[in-house]
Length: 198
Image (cartoon, rainbow, N blue to C red; front, side, top):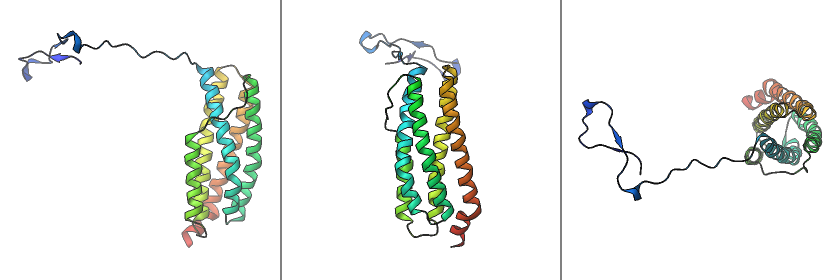
């Protein structure tokens, strides 16, 4: 039980005085939560496992998206990004090596949700002029997630003095930003226009 107001308090008396409850059994001993012994190194490693899972999941999803896409340009963009994603996975393996850890994936709920959404679009809009617009939106959601993750990890790597990891993460971050720009260009030029016209 928490603090209790003294009886006889009037609204005009100003703030109430607080007293501890008299009954010792009602007083629960408050203890501060135990501080975790984990540090930025651990957080970096955990997030690395997370993005490693994400890249492998994306690698498995991109061929399905390329197959479903109706626009030749969108198909080509997905196929190109699949090749880049293979490089991203290889770079992440190098980052694991930099920190002396074995490459391990940890299920990333965020990317599972985003890719599930993309699969839903492929199923629900199959054959629709709006399909490519939906695929683009799903692909950009993936890119924005990756840009956020790689940006954060690059910052942490710099703070931890992991220069080699900074360079590897920066390369991938640049490619993710380029892919996002390409997808935006596609959306603005042809794909969304085609969906609107239908």
